[in-house]
Amino acid sequence: MSNTAVQKFKKIREQAAEVVKDSRIDRSDKLQQICQLLADEVEVFDWVGFYLVDSDADRELVLGPYVGEATDHTRIPFGKGICGQAAETNETFVVQDVSKEDNYLACSIEVKAEIVAPVKKDGEFVAELDIDSHTRDSMTDDHRELVEDICEQVAPLF
Ligand code: SME
Image (cartoon, rainbow, N blue to C red; front, side, top):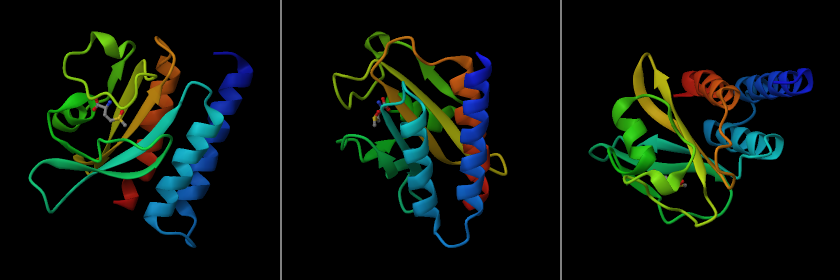
């Protein structure tokens, strides 16, 4: 990663930290602002959203704050799609070419790559950050680290 890119990612992390500690806004607004920040600042991030564990349902995710096109997948059972698989394993799932995935829920034909990282509260899976890209092979290790760092930062909000 170039020095400029390193600085940019560092700034995104710092801005996310500011949002997390802003006592004037609630969790939902914080997550919304973080989605906006990532969508605005990272060129290949075309859809950015949080899915939350629905505590009233049996192993099901419910769509939370997001930035990007509306999706039909507002509820996703654990195990289904990339999101459901990340929920089941509690691990980051990176897909560079979604056309090669059998267990995948398409939101739009534009989407080519996806990364989903878990938000863990005391090790327990509570939510996930899902990012779609319209560019195949676009998810780098630096993106993965950034997304995982954001998930760690928001975990105390749960
Ligand atoms: N593609 C995801 C579904 C959620 S959308 O990307 C917003 C999946 O396969 O789980």
